[in-house]
Length: 408
Image 1 (cartoon, rainbow, N blue to C red):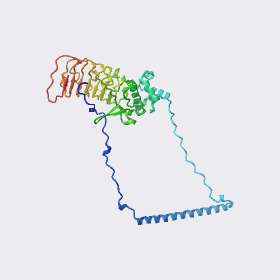
Image 2 (spheres, rainbow, N blue to C red):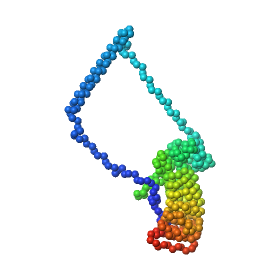
Image 3 (tube, helix red, strand yellow):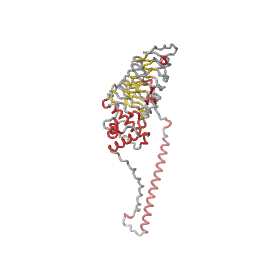
Image 4 (tube, rainbow, N blue to C red):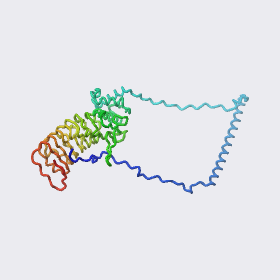
C-alpha cells in the first residue's frame, strides 16, 4: 500500500497497563519504644509465680502416683493374688483405642492410551462438526496431523471431552482451540515458519506468542488470549512476515472471540478465504496483505458487525463488494492490486459512514467516480487509479472541515 496507512496502534488490541511496582510505597522501619520495655520487678514477680505453680504441680503428680500404687496393692491382696511377682503389682494395661474407620479411596479414572485418546478425540470433533470425517481420517490432511499431535504427542495431555453437549464448556473450548491452532499450524506449513512462536510446544496455547515492542507500543505476535490460560479464549492471531505458505483452514471458525486476524507479507499463503466469519462478532481487524489468496470475499463477512480494518490488498482475489457493503463500522479498506470488479456508483459506499481511507486501485472496477466519496465527511485517502472508470471527476467540495488529503 503506497498510501498513508493508519498505525495499527489506533486499534485497541490490549487492556489497561499493569501498575508499576516501583511506585508502591516503601515499608517504614518500626522501632520499639522504650516505654514498651518490660519492668524488671514485674519479670521477677512472674518468675516467682511460675516457680510456685511448678512446685504445686509436681506435688500433685507425686501424691497421685502414691495413691494409685496403694490402691493397686490393696486390690491385689483382696483378690488373693500373689504379691511376690513384681509384674503383677502395676495396674492392668487398658486395651488400645480402636482406630477411626478409614474412608475408601476415591476410584481413579484410568489414563486413556494414546489410541483411546485419538479415537475419543476424533469422535468428539466429528459429532460436534468441528472438522469433517474425511479430513480427520485422511493422514495427509492438517486436521489428521493436528488430531494425532494433540492426542498422542502433545506433552500437555489436555483432557478430551466425550460428550458433544460439552462443546460450550471451558474444558471443551480448551481442547478445540488447541486442536484448531494445531490445524492452522499444519495447514500453513508451520514446520517451515521463520519463527515458531511456541506453536505445538508443551505450553498452554494461550502462551503461543512473543512480545514485540516498537518504542512505547507493545504487540503480541502469535496466538494471544484474553482471560488467562485457564479460561482464556484466543482473541488474536497475528503472524506477519513469517514465511507461511499453504491455506487457511475452515477450523478458523472455532475462534469466536477473535478480534485480530493478521497474516500480512507471508507471500505464499494461497487458496480461498474460508467461509468462517459468521460467529466472530468481535473481529475488528483483518490484514491479509501481500499473499496469494484467491477467490471472493466469503459471505460470512456480512456478520462482522464490528469490523473496522480490512486489508486484503496484493492478492489474487476477485468478485464484488456485496458481502461487506453493509458493514457500517468500516474505517480503513485496502483492496488494491487484486481482480475485484463491480460497477461503482454513489450507492456503492453509502453504508460506510465512518470510512477514513479507501484504496481500490489496480482492480477491474468500472462506472463513474462516486461523488459521495469526494463529499464524505471523514475520508482522508481515496485511491481509484488503474480501473476502468469513466466520466468526469466530480467537483471536490471546498467546505470547511473537508478532510480529503490524497486522491488518485
